[in-house]
Every structure is written in structure tokens, then in C-alpha cells.
Length: 383
Image 1 (tube, rainbow, N blue to C red):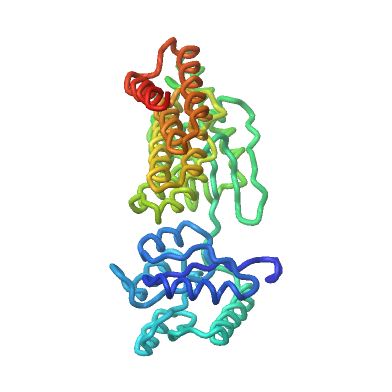
Image 2: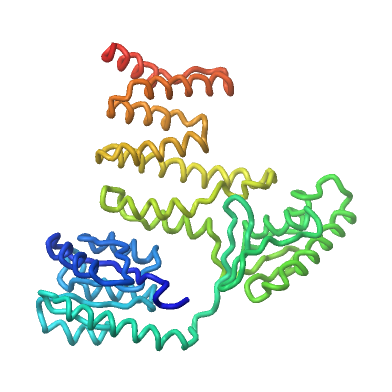
């Protein structure tokens, strides 16, 4: 892609709001720039940078909790391609900056002319680096949210074509238990319980053969081995979207007004329930576990927005929950309370009626007592 067609994504970190706003204004005057984030909290900034596709980080050297030098070191450990520019009022930090391989450092107060010089240096370096191949091995990205898709760098996503449904199911079961030994007898009990032992083993070997043939184009990433009476699906340089999503969620900072955008990006990775398009019974436990994490996090996000006087954002999340999980009473209640905050009486009534209708049609139940009592009290207060 031509440089003029791609915006350079920048993050600014400075614990002083005025300095942060000043840098945003300066950078905002330059063409080809997109300010992806501006943070006063360096730990929140680090989480955001590691999650997003950032090109340049402008870091103040003197930050609370962690210095800009240490912050840069932690960022570069995980994302060595990110360009680091230090912003400091103290020239003595320049030597440290260049020891860390920072691209540049800017002395406060930063001028437009000095900033342009820095950006030109970055763009020139990027042009030179574009022709140098990366040493890092390619990664195979495996989507298992909703359906199964294989994606390699610079290639179109691929949906594998399976010879038999049982071969596909065997592969997905081994993938769910990847890099773990699974007994053949357990696989037969799972997939072919109705067959005699000899026939069942024959079907198992045939399915394993089909798997090897189907995943052959990805042999450097996936390999199925037959060992000690069982099978192992070995993975190398494979990124499973479910594991990445769960890892990002586990390492996320405490949820608050400043960090919630980090959660928004994480939740965008949840494309649908785990193996949603497949009806294999053994999937259900893992599917429900991940779905519960999604539901719990979504409700927390909606409450965070509501608690920080951002009702439109809260409504959007609550409605998304109700759409995906029609019996989630807490989401309906959250919508009712949010619309009550907004003094939208008709919508409070609408969502209570919808909840009542869904619960009665699906379960022959009424809304729980806590919700019902809240609704009655609200009606009396607004009669």
C-alpha cells in the first residue's frame, strides 16, 4: 500500500492533561496521522498499544507508576516494530532513550518544526524497512468463534472442505484439546459408540487419514501424530481466536471510564459463540463457558457506561445482549433502569413487556421478583 493511502496510527502518553492536549493539537495539524489513543495512565496505555495496531508511541519520560523508559521497554519486548519517540523536559534522558533504540526524543516545549522533522525521519525509516523481510515466522490464525476459518498472512481466509463430517468432528475435537494426548478408545466412544471395536478403529484410522490430507497445506503449523494408543494434534505458530480473546480479557486492566475502550476492542473479537455453526454435543460445555465470560463482561461494560453517564453506549450493549441472549433478565433490567435515567417512560414499559413476553413464551415464567418489584415501584413513582 502506498504511504499516502495509509494513516500512521499514533498513541500519546503523558500524565499531564495540558501536555497531552498540546501534543494532540500539534499532531492533528499533520497529514497522514490518526491519533488512535491519548492516555494519562501508562498501564492502560500499554494494554491498549499491545492490543491495537499502533505505528508510533509518543511517551513522556516521567510518568506515574512506571517510567516512560520502562514502559517503552515493555512495549518493545512484545511489539518490536513500534516506533518510540520520547517527549521530555530533561535532556539527560536522551542517552537512555537512544540506548533503548528509541527513534527520537523531543524536548518540551515541542515545536511544530521539530515534530515535522521527527515524523519525516520515521517515514524515511519505514520506507527503508519496507523492503527488509521480517525474521519472525508467519502465524496461522484460526477462527473458531462461530465457524472455522484458516488465515495466513497476505492470503484470503480459507474454509476447509472435509471428506466426511466425522473427519471434521475428529479434527475439531483434537483442536479443542490441541497439544494433548487423547486416547483412541475415548475417541471411539465419542464418535463411533454404536460400532463393533474393529469397525470403529477402522473408521478412526480413516478419519485421521482424511485429516492429514486436509490439513496438509498447513503442515508447518498443524500435525497429527499417532502415539501410545492415542492421537495428538501438535500446533506451532498457531493463534486461536478463542485463546487470544480469553488471554486479553484475563490481562485487561480494571474496568473504568478510562480503560473501557480496551474492553470494547476485546469484545469485538467475539464474532459469535464457540463453534456456533456446529451441533456436536461435546462442544457445549466450552461454548457455555466462553459465552458466560462474554455475558458477564458485557453486563459490566454496560453498567460502567451507565455509571459514567453514557446512557447511549449502555443501551447499545444491553440491546446487543438481549439480541444474543433473549432470556438475560439482567440485560432487560439494565435497559429499563437506563431508560428510566433518561426519563423515557415508554421504553421502560416496552422492555418490561418484552421481557415478560419472552420469559412466558420460552419458559412459562414471569420476570423475577426483584425486577418486578423495581418495575412496580417505578410505575408508582411515575404515575
